[in-house]
Structures are given as C-alpha cells and as structure tokens.
Amino acid sequence: PQNNNVNSKTNVNDIPITIYQLRNSYSTLLLRSVNGLADMFRHQKKSAMLSVSHCCSLAGLPLWIVDVRHDASHNDLPSLGVCRIGALESLRFWGEKFWVVLEERVWGDVDVNGSG
Image (cartoon, rainbow, N blue to C red):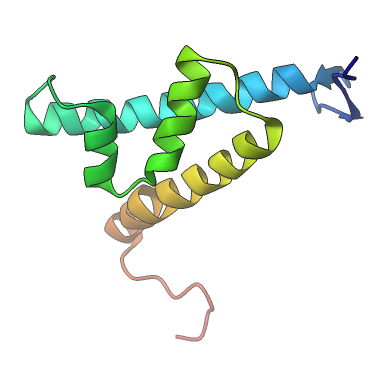
C-alpha cells in the first residue's frame, strides 16, 4: 500500500499532512482559480454561455490547467506533481496578468532593481 504521509510537517500546529490532502488542496486552488477566471470573463462578456475552456483560452491561461481542473472536478485527483506544476503555472499566470498590472496601476512603473 502507498504511504500517504509526507515527511515534512505543515506550519499549523506542526500537524502532519497526507499526500491526498496536498493533492486535494492544490486541486481546490486550481479549481477556484480557473472557475474564477471563467466567471470574470463571463461577467465581462455578459454571457453565461461561454465555456470554461473558451474563457480561459481568451485570457491566455494554458488549457492543460483547465484540463487538470476538469479532472480534479469530475474524475480522480491529479498526481501531486501535476498539481504542483499547475499551481506554479497558475501563480505565474496571475502574477503576469493581474498582480503586475495592478501594481503598475497603483504605483506606476517601479524600478525593482533600484537603479533609477
């Protein structure tokens, strides 16, 4: 049988977490991220008929992340490796498409290297 315990501990009360719990947490992150993006596009386009994959494609999110979200929602949870790669790619996407844009709107063009 597969050992579902992870050697490291979480930061919350030093409680061990299982691989299944990690897969579930990552899958939830991907599900909420993809669905939130699709909902945002549906609201902007004033059309609830747009598919999740169509909305995410318009936004520039890699469609394999939408597929991972679909599997997590309707099939078995993806492997821990796939979940982690999906989370990293989702983080990169939101950073480029949302956080950097928001930061520029709030602070202007900031030189992060401190050279100017």
